[in-house]
Length: 404
Picture 1 (cartoon, one colour):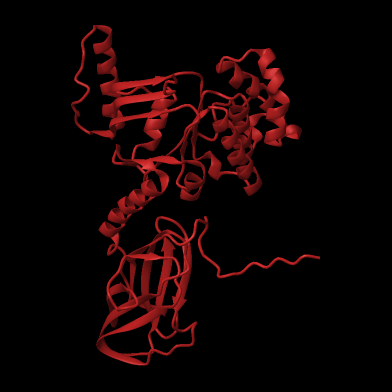
Picture 2 (picture 1 turned 120 degrees about the vertical axis):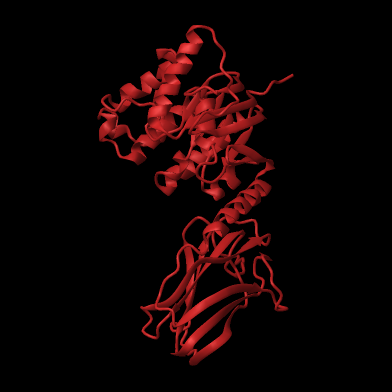
């Protein structure tokens, strides 16, 4: 019978927004512990808030679990408790075996010591003997690709080099539990690929791995199971694709609160609203890859406006721009507009891959630079299904085999 390597039972952690009051609370709590007086851990004092609230879960040997949530959701606080850097105010964490945590770029390294010295110190802290370290040393250095920099102080390393060394030490000492927080997003593509392959090897050897990342493709690729956090609580624990859907819905709620926060322009013509319609001119929020999408741009012109430029910018939710579509770039003249009306933008095949997308709307003067009005995060849509491929866009294609 196997036991979970991590058991988290109803843990909670609170912090104080005021530094001065936080220091005072720390002194009071320390004094209460010294005299054996139990405090009420479940009561929030002035300026305190729950970073993590009543979280429970288990991780089995060989399981790779993702942890996602927007900024402030409690991911890092939970990770620090799992790594033993801070203790929960209530609840219990039981970890069976050796834990290696890559929670920051430094990964526990001493910056004034060399890479070689840090390897030995880091491994010794995990309970490895010098003989055991020597047996793994060449593999660690080879994987990191830092052999020529090994006798330089770590403080002279770039952030990517530090991550290389930190991950290499953690991966080749083969702990029972590996905690990885965002470090896989640093470094070049070749090293990130090596890291992913090594994580799969560790998983096959029974190492339990928990990964925190804002890169949903990484989470989807490496983690069959994912926990989604919101405001310090687990709002979903299950298969990764469903967890990502819950995460995106959580982000969309936040975006909807601020979608009218950035407006500006000269105001002769304004954006009333954007609509996203399907092939039957019906409002729709969820599409599959390759469906027809119509963006209806409603406007109100207070006076005659000559040939305004309409612009729609598409972003991945909480991330970078995918594309922008403009009437002037497409050689389309909008003519003279006055009063109320709308302009339709038909996208015959919406070939963006599964994700959540937000749309910014802008109306420019005919010079294409000065704008009448803009509305960021005016509307959103979600793409699901279609293709089991990571990335941004689907390119229609075909394969051919030629035998010589």
